[in-house]
Picture (cartoon, rainbow, N blue to C red):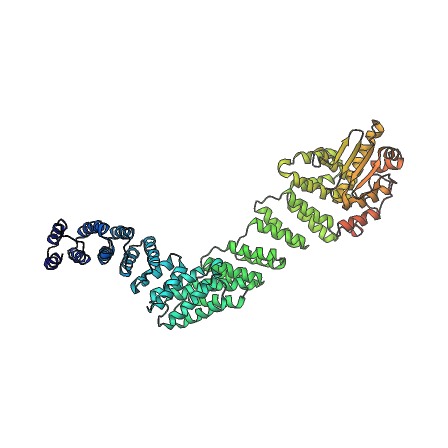
Length: 640
């Protein structure tokens, strides 16, 4: 084959060289030769005949099957390198796979050529596959491949592999360039923002690389400064973030709004008012426009610190920047409300009104509720008026909650404010409340009929729970002011409308029971008297006597009900949660004139013992302060 090789070296035409080679293959003395193939591949590469290279490669694979692959090691690698450099990456990868299947060793130069061509063409997964094969073969990258491979691994998120290559590069005495440092610092820093990555020390690694980069003489650019500052800021590492930020400013780089924002939001989240305001002023003085999230974080911080005047200044500046501030102003208002700072909330609302900044009805109602809880009734009424005038509907629950405040009220002046607030609701329940206290001449119908009409107008599918709440509070109010007849009418109609469907149970001749556990004190007392009156009629008029009668009170109402009944010597015995008595004993008790008069007229709503118990359960009821007429005798007199 020596004479063939000599001929190939002097021949200039690649086609002629290929024809000579194919003629030689047909001769009996032909023997595959690594040097011969290399010479031929060089000729074909010079003429850019890559189809010819691929064709000869196929012949070489067949030759290696007969004569072994070891002798053709250099030729195999030469083919792949030529194809890779020509960016024939699909053909090159196919040839690479065939070499691997044939068992031939691939040298470092070939691996690097393949990795380079795949990375340059954006085929990262192919490059990584070649790199994994390279690792298994024990080969290492060259300088140019390191410069390509490390940034590609870092940007794809394979940070451990990238950092391992970086360390390997230094062991092999290659000096990392700026591109490698920049990609590693950037990727490590961004990964360090995530809590899961912090455990792996991504940010610490990024900072070590940052220091190493500066020591090597590479000057960080604007993007890296920004990334390091923002990554450490968003991870809560104040000292590092501020230190790098200071160096950044000294290096002549103007921080971006994003950098300022990340630092400001970091300090705001940590409650550092002075640092946050300093950054905000620096940002605005530099002519930069804070973002919406920056304003939101700063306003939230100032609200939590109760710096109302500063918050107002920032909000107006935000408005001047062209932002819509209604939501942010409402958020500040909610901070004050949730914190219980009602005075500050009212001041902030006045500021909003003077600055033509609106809030929503939900927040107005929240502030109204806070004013009511804190007894600021004068401030509460304008809020309710605003709520009603904005076409918001006062529901039965809100009306009842105001009525509950009236039930607990001790001061006559506050009573007048609460009456005014009830009137301002414009709820139909207030018309009912006014009508129930007027005389039959003005109502032009009996109380019971009037009450029935009101309850017939309630949509029980939507307001059943609210109606029960209203009945409980209303009965408390009526009992406390001595309006027992009206209270009995309300209970009777509420029961007719099945608001308390399981309260009364008639179990034939065995047991009759009344369950008042879910009732207020006033409702429970009225229910007991009214139901015992029903039981009396059944037993005396119809002759039906059960074995026993139970009043299920629960531990809270047990003493109140027992004290009321003991005043007329009832046979009911008190246990843990129930008052019970034999039916015969109750029948005898019902026959007493005092009991009949008691059940037909009124319960001793103003008796000292009863009022004492009401004051325990409703500590602010304080009936002794109220403008009430002197207490009536226990069973004498007519119901009011």
